Image 1 (tube, one colour):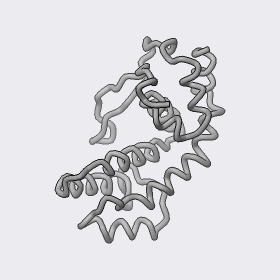
Image 2 (cartoon, helix red, strand yellow):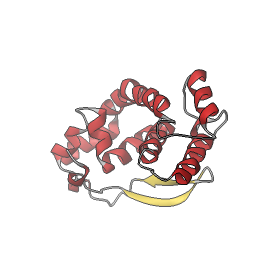
Image 3 (cartoon, one colour):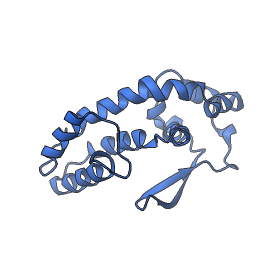
Image 4 (cartoon, one colour):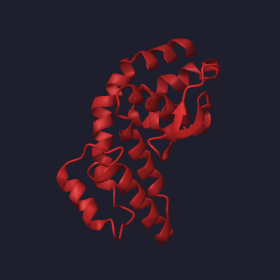
Length: 166
């Protein structure tokens, strides 16, 4: 499934959240009926299917926010964007932002990674490469896939969307 088949039933609402980021929220009048049952059902096939869909990302983020763990998805998405950067200066700026927001000890949205991974990133952050965050991103993906995602599938948020999309 490509993201072009996924409809925007969620809207991004600009706001200050923790001083630096945009908050995304469900807009009640947004039409859940726009989400077709096959689209919502594919989210249950794998975390990859869910993350391929922009609306799926927003729904999953909303769920993670209820568990106080949205930093996992936000970090993973930031890493995906980081991998697309080709300009060295832009890469350095983006790496610094990701490091300060998610990786460094006491970061506003500190992710749960082992100290070895955190130290490896800290040592390389002054000259970051395109793979700078790969190890941490894999760890966070595994955490989401094995912990958060199964709970999401059982959540009221997902179950309600499944029922309403039918």
